[in-house]
Image (cartoon, rainbow, N blue to C red; front, side, top):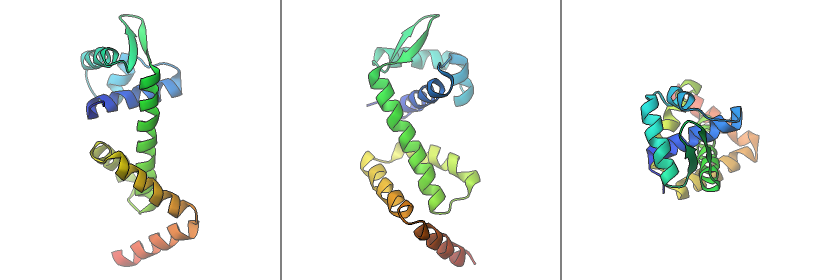
Length: 139
């Protein structure tokens, strides 16, 4: 299993490849707010652990294993954002909150949160009712 730090890199690489078709060390460093040398070290570790294939000066691509993990990490991130939005967390807080909790939940918890999200999404009136009750309790 990848470490939380490895997960952040895999998720970012996956997102960059999906959106741009490639991921460069400089892009990853900028997105994760780290030094390029840190990215290079992590890319080498991800290569060693078979999450991506890296050739010095030529770039890298995710392996099937890396892509599968990347898809799951993006799913987890998006699900948690959706969950926090449904329960009424302010939009300005959602991204940072997800970054703070995503590595600390088991996949069993993620699956249960998915069940809750699906429950609310299956009947939009439930979301409206939840937000009404939150508005009442805040007054």
